[in-house]
Structures are given as C-alpha cells and as structure tokens.
Amino acid sequence: MAAPVLASRTGSVNSVGNSPTATPNNPNNNNKIIPSYPELDFRSGARIEELNKLIQEFSKHDQREYDDQRALEIHTAKDFIFSMLGLVQKLDQKLPVANEYLLLSGGVREGVVDMDLDELNIYARGTDFDLDFTLLVPALKLHDRNQPVTLDMRHSALCHSWLSLRLFDEGTINKWKDCCTIVDHINGTTNYFFSPTLVADWFYESIGVVLQEVQKKPQRGMPKVEKVEKNGTIISVILGVGSSRMLYDIVPVVSFKGWPAVAQSWLMENHFWDGKITEEEVISGFYLLPACSCTGRKENEWRLSFARSEVQLKKCISGSLMQAYQACKALIIKLLSRPKAISPYHLRSMMLWACDRLPANYLAQDDFSAHFLLGLIDDLQHCLVNKMCPNYFIPQCNMLEHLSDETVMLHARKLSSVRSDPAEHLRTAIEHAKAANRLTLDLQRRGSSASLPSPQSDSGEHQPDDRLAKKLQQLVTENPGKSISVFINPDDVTRPHFRIDDKFF
Image (cartoon, rainbow, N blue to C red):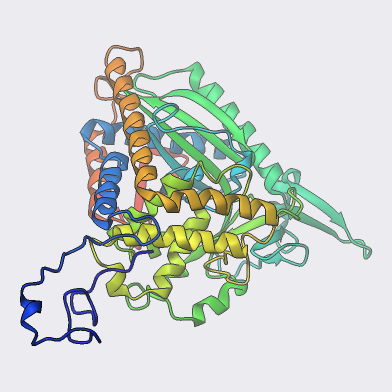
C-alpha cells in the first residue's frame, strides 16, 4: 500500500535541512531544480491520482440511481413480495402473524450476509437482473425476553449452533414438528431441533403454492414472476416490473433480541463506532442463518449473523472507504470465487477490522480511496497467506480455518496479479459495469413496447399509490445507512408500516 505524501515530512525531496550531503548556504543549490514526482504506489508503480479517478469512475457506473419510474417499480416489487409472504403465513400459520423483515440492498452473492456461495446459481447484473436485494424473513421470532431459548453449541463449530425447541410451548412444537430433527434421550424425553434445511424446503414449497394461486388470477400492474429457484437454503425470486428486473434472495431465519453470550467479549473492546452510535443500537438483535460449518450437520446447524448490527456500523464508515470496498469487491468477486474460498463477506469483515485499527481522521480523507483499495487488497492477501480471517463479532472464529494450504496459496497468487496492476483490473471492472448498464438500458427500451406491464400506465383499483412510492424514496434518501424494517399485517397487506431505527412511519 502506498503511504500518503505529507508536505512537512522530514527528509522529503523538497527539504534539505536534514540531508547529510546538503549545504543550505551553497549558492549552487539555488539553481538546482528539484523535480516534483507524482505520488506512486510502490508495488505497482501506478499513480495514486489515476487510481482515485478510476475508483470514482467505477462508482459512477456501479451506483444505482432511482428516478421516479424506477422507485415506483421497486415499491411495486417489494409490495408483491410482502403480500406473497402474508399469504404464506395464512397457509398453515407457521410464520409469525406480526412479522419483522430486514431488507438489505444487494443480494446474497454481494456478501451482505455470511452465506455459502458455492450452492448458489450464478446470476449477473444486466444479464439476469437490474437490482438485487436480500430479505431476511423470521420463521421464528424470539423477541420476548422472558422466552427461554436454548442455543446448543456443543455439536457445532464456533459461530454456529443448533436450536432446540425443548423449552418452547407445545403449540409451537406441534406447529414446527415437521421441520425438526428428533433426538430421543435415554431418560425417555424427546428433543426437537429446528432444522434449517427442512425449514427452507417448507418455505420454498409454500412460496410455490402461493405463487401458483396468485398467477391464476393475475391483476393489472402485478409483477411478472420470471424465476423462482431454491439455491441451497435461499429462495431466489426474480420479478419483472415495467422495464426492471428485481432479484430477491429470501432467507428464512430465526430472529432474536439482545446479544449472544458467545459474542459478549467483543463488547468489552474499543471500536471505531464508539461515541458515534450507542451500544443499544449495535446490540439490538441477531439472527440464525440457515448455513452450517464445513464439518457441521446441514440438517441441524445454523450460523450466527449480526446483519442488523452491520447496518448500524455502516453509518460510521466514510464514503471514500465504502467506494474502495465496492471497487475491491468487484475486482475479487469472480477471481476468487472458484474453488470455494473467499466471499465478499470476508472482505467486509476485513474492512470493519481496518476501521478499528486505523485512525478515524485518516479513514475520513475524501481523496484516499486508492490507498484504501490497495490496503484492502494487502489485507486480503495477508489473510490468505496466513489462513486467518477472524469474524468481526466473534474474533475467536477463524473464517478461513477450513481451507487447505493449496487453496489459499492459489488465491494468494491470483490476488498478487491484481495487486501488481490495480489500474488495469479497475479498467476491466469499469467495462463490466458499463456493459451491465447497457444491457439494462436495452431492456428498458424494449420494455416500453413489450408485454411487461408498467405500474404507472395502469388504471383502476389496483393502481399503486404513487405517493407511497415517493414517500419510500424520500425515507431512503434522507436516512442513508439506517436500519429500515417493514411490518406487514397478513390480514391487511395493503398497509405496510416502516420503521427507521426506532421511528415508525
């Protein structure tokens, strides 16, 4: 990583005061022209200024800007997904009646949550979708502090757990019994373990039943369901709305209030967000994701997730560092994806560790994106060579521990090619972003005369409320980085309720 130039640095090329060979009073020095060199990256020789410009250009093509039409299409797709989930709840009353979803910008493949990407089909922006989201849907919502919870970590790797329903009421056990693995003890008692794979199977089948019924009675302006696929324990739905294609990665989870004991020691350390947001905001809740460790039992093991906390922490990360992170993710997401090794979530964890390690005023520099990009690449290479990437919230959990020496060295060599010529790899990423945008624009032009209905062109009782779409767009614009939750009453899916942090709308 290139160190930033400091104007007052001792011994710089413009200072002769500390040079052992300089004679300040020598008149010959007055005629000597000392060249001013541009700031360079020592490893690649790339100009820092050029790298900054390339990162800015990539951000311009990669960012998603919503006009009124796109905002309305996003709202229409979201409304359809929430209405669908309300109907899923009505099927067999398994899902909580008053549920709370966490909607994240970016799909699972973008690393917004820590899931295993090797089980996912490959979707590409521009080719398969235009916008992507991850939606965490609680199958169980354990928000009552008096509700006894048994996280059984005896059989799991760090950051993973089994979930026993043994202490739940009989009604809950009977409701979910078909989605549990059963263990009979010697003393005659029966233990029910909530199964992520069985829950995902049930969820996928239920969504299929609901969509089949909905499509029998299509309504004007209703999104077109272009694809529904089960990717491991994730249900991926692609909707066509007007000229846009929206990818929703829907993940069944278990939602908790509070903070797990296994991550308690993390709260005792100093962090970059201290004094910027409250501890109560950071530890408001956590999830169990349907993902297991490489040595765990898929049918029983869940993975701890702190996605809600990460939404809060993102508010404390500078724009220039986020730009560098997005650019770095674009450089490595395909390069290091096969064989299974590195996911964008690893890079996100490294960025959070860097925020703890480096001074806040350094990370706040607007023109340091190039330094941050090179530093993230260096950090990632260091993690690969040492086969060590601690989970940010549970540092004793090494997320690369399961990799073989051959795999990490293979990826370290691949990453070395990026580090030796970051400018060229950034140019390639820019071209890919441009190509994706061209595909989207081509589809939009064709969509103006195609059969996909535009919600703005419809009339009648099913026309979406444009005022609500504008309100949603305003809430998102005015509350960058904040946790936005949506509450849905399945008996009245026409009235969504938004919560931004602790405020309701």
